[in-house]
Amino acid sequence: MIALIGIIVLFVLLALGVHIGIALGAIGFAGTWAIVGLEPALWGSVNVFYDKVASFALLTVPMFILMGYMASAGDLSGNIFTSLNKWVGGVRGGMGIATVFSCTLFGTICGTSLVTSSVFSVIAAPEMRRHGMDKRLSYGICASSGLIGMLIPPSILMVVYGVISGDSVGKLLIAGISPGLLLAVIYSAAIIILLRTKPGLMTSDSGGTATWRDRFASLRGLWPVMIVATVIFGGLFGGVFTPTEAAAVATFTVFLIIGATQPREWAAVVWPAFVDTAKVSAMIFLIFGGAAIFTQFLVLSGVATKVASIIIGMDLSIYGFLVAISLLYLVLGCLLDSISMLSITLPILLPVVRTMGIDPIWYAVIVIMAIEIGMITPPVGLCVYGAKAVAEPDVTLEDIFAGSFPFFLASLAVLILLIFFPTLSTVLPALMN
Image 1 (cartoon, rainbow, N blue to C red):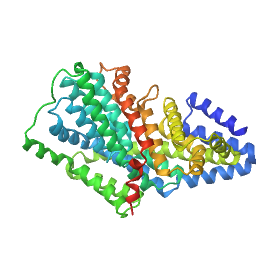
Image 2 (cartoon, rainbow, N blue to C red):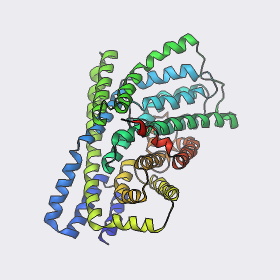
Image 3 (cartoon, one colour):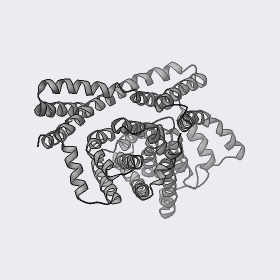
Image 4 (cartoon, rainbow, N blue to C red):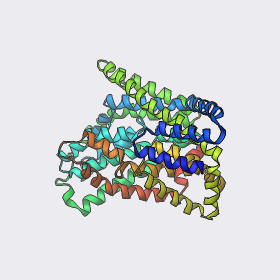
């Protein structure tokens, strides 16, 4: 009963605008106090908070955030888009496809959907509009393609999941490669189908043509991404680095690349990136600490075990359970941000997953995909808000949500494939040393 009251109060606090980290910590401490008394609650909360935020694996988060901020400010994203547009911009809808795969490549050096969506809303959306693409579709592509960046390593959400669940962060990162590439292909197909069924969405036939010489010359703009991707993927696959070490080496690599390519702007790029990283990391660490206290409360109350027994008693098949969990996250995605959803739900649901014998990597990818779809659904579609923040003056929030809807359906299709074809998520992690 104490746990149920605590969960209800938690959602009330979130509705009132209380920061998720503070709400989780406060409810967790108060509930633990009610169960075991003040002194044990104080000692337990302080210790569990410290143990969680002092985790070596957690260093991966600020490293990946810093790498993303430096890559964004260092114009690496612009080089990626320019290069890919040379290759596919000449076909109808090619600029949209170039944007999708630019977001995919940029995802290898930026682990956040929000940053990816915002960056390409500045770089690609105005260009697509200039070549005759409908404004809603242009910004819908940019907002939605940010989701790919949270699947392709380095994914901050995968790291968060691993830290909370205790699963291998390295395997979780690698598991996102196949689903991320699949999502990029499905998005590209959606663009082609949309423009064929609704020709009015694009008033011209192409985004410009380029000679083969120009195309091959443009590949020079991709070398920073190739180097960073090799460091991360090669290091993790080969067992050379732990995920934390891979994050540090990759971040330092981006640091050196910016120093070599933009020596005069180096300070202007790097210093703000460090400041922004400190702000965002502090917020995430507070959520981690609060979630640890809340998890301790749920364990002491026995509610996690009770929920597990109820769900198992429903005698759902594994696929039925995964579909139900996906629907839960799709609904929560309309109300909460990604890290909040993981922090609240994982302590309750993971005992069920382990009892049912579900592959933890497969389950993690499904959860991350379902959560990411919430990034483009109203009213808390953060990728849409990120795109709107940098959009041209005549573009409304409703325009971007409308433009994102076809990609919402495409994302659901990918989620269904991930549920019914688990090898899409597990084949690459199984190859790791």
